[in-house]
Length: 153
Image (cartoon, rainbow, N blue to C red; front, side):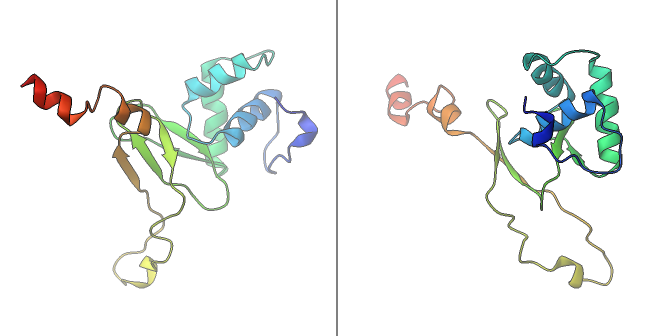
């Protein structure tokens, strides 16, 4: 993990060693993580002391209440995922094979002004997920070459 001086911790909460470790994992991740994934990454980093998965959940609850993280679930997964809120937001393409989450480069709703569209509904946010197969899963056994399939029949 990086040295404590390398981070500017958001104001508004007491920054314990455990909270700093969770922050470092989440802010350094390119995709949403579950509490168990965060816990395992902290353990792998060799960080010392006082961790249990329940501690991670409590920290994530505080971060969510303060608006630091976004909590979501993805289709086909029962696990809640957490992502550190950066400037703006991120949409993902989710692989149905390996469950890898690939961030989309831009928000397709960026140029729409949905709030101005209707007096009957106030848009406060949105979520977009695309589902399919990553390059690795597409090239593996999930999609065998059509020529091979036709020879087997």
